[in-house]
Length: 208
Image (cartoon, rainbow, N blue to C red):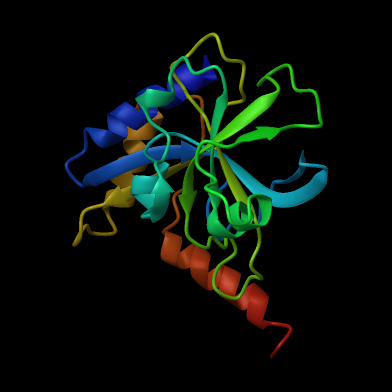
């Protein structure tokens, strides 16, 4: 029910003329939230940062897919779980080999998702914490809101790309649209530039 409600929120936001794209995710860039995991491939364990996102997340965030593709309807009904990794993780896992199409065997049993993940795309270097954060391996999993047969937790964040020149007053307009869709929920808006400034202060404080 919560995933269906978030899907309705995204539709309501996309209907606003100021919005170019809208998506949902567990974690937003520059936020204090982190999600780390590890996986074993070919007898070697790799640790990486992770996030779950909907199909429009790459468009909202302007992620540069250098190989393969981002999640799409093409992945509906697939026998595997599609994932997108950054170039750093792809090179570590499959040196000298094409990572797109490779299966990743999980050591941890996961009844929710099944035993295998398959790389469908590779993005460039990705640092969730910003330019001053150390480089890290990163992996995106697909969060599909409209499939009742998949038991996944609903995303916690909504991200929007608005048209150039959109005034700051749009934030209250967007919040109002969300409150109409989910009157029992509370919302808080923050520009990504503000999150970036906060993250930079945290990274630079020890140097100062």
